[in-house]
Image 1: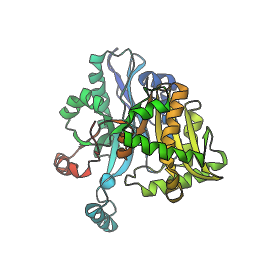
Image 2 (image 1 turned 90 degrees about the vertical axis):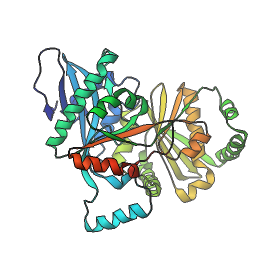
Image 3 (image 1 turned 90 degrees about the horizontal axis):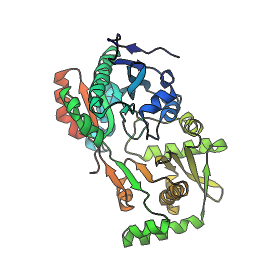
Image 4 (image 1 turned 120 degrees about the vertical axis):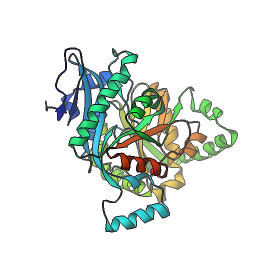
Length: 382
């Protein structure tokens, strides 16, 4: 077991001891998952991310231990963060890129961030025996120690990524008291599977959407769908589809690797799958899903943008995933962030997320507060 990178000197018995670990293996599956009950993206998912060799990120895991028990935990990461990552294409982003040709590190700060770039939201985990009234104390303990750790790693900027609105409401006072500013993040789209059949689901949609979907679903006649738990010889093709899709996206943060895609299916055996979409013998799209017995999370849909669109593959994937949920008793389909127009049209609701940040230099923090609306990625309301 690896030793923690940093830990507080133990306090008197019963008081918390906070640690930062370089690997989630140092904490253990049972101890981690006990704090994240009801989270599909659990220990095995984070281990797959850790082992994926994603460039530019150093993984960390922060725990608060009381009497030998992990009482609170959060994943974290360190990276060189480009503040223009969330800027929309346009004059401002083009201007930033021109400056960066001369000064490569312009608007780039070393960031220590709670959360994960590869999970849907930034969850704060607590052991189920922790009383609700004590959670804020433990969160403040964890956050305070992570700030100290960030300083030892030359990270002037500390952040929390994609914190869901309920969590922001619970710990917003603690964050504000420590000087954190917030900006809107991309909301999370989700759909309750509160219907028994696809026809019953279609009946819930507007007449125009229902008619459009029935027309699009006719593409199933030309498309073969395979649900697989291993990429096998198709992994290079999936990665080509991934890069094609990523290059079309406005939002680019981490770049996933073949080890990530295969690692998720391997580590989360029985709780993940990839749907393959073929026209004749040509793979045109793939859709990676992770799930537990409660929720299915759409991790990544990748498609040949030119050849796949005529077959309505995005919509076929939506209904394929709903059928999977129905067949396996899963009661919620979470379709992720961005591209909300179709998701809302198909009945999804949105939960707001926020990003919190604090720079050690109060003058720079004031400047970041001033310009933060330019970097907000909020595209919808909960």
